[in-house]
Each structure stands twice: as C-alpha cells, then as structure tokens.
Length: 69
Image (cartoon, rainbow, N blue to C red):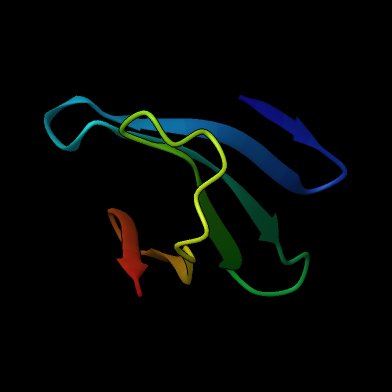
C-alpha cells in the first residue's frame, strides 16, 4: 500500500473467492471525498482476467468513513 501525492494505491485479496486485484484511490484537497477504481489481477488460475473491476468513492462522515459503489 502506498500514498503519494494524494493517491493511495494497493492490493486486495479474496481468499474465499480465489481472486485478487489492485486499487487506486485519489483524495480531493478541498472536500472530504476520494474517488477510486479497482480491477482484478487474478481470478483463479487466470493471471490476465478480462473481467472488469469498477469504481467506488469514500467520503468522510462524522465519526468515520463511508464507502459508496
């Protein structure tokens, strides 16, 4: 996981579904909102999956963080 110039990049794993992927989340300077994308890097034994990922956003709320898809 890395945070550089307001961009957070990292990897995710789903052992129960035998999938893994990466994400990139870009934080806004003026509002408490971050927009991101995620994608697969492996589904089962397929290391070049064509299945798309998606977009998501995180926003700061009082007392925590909320994720929206």
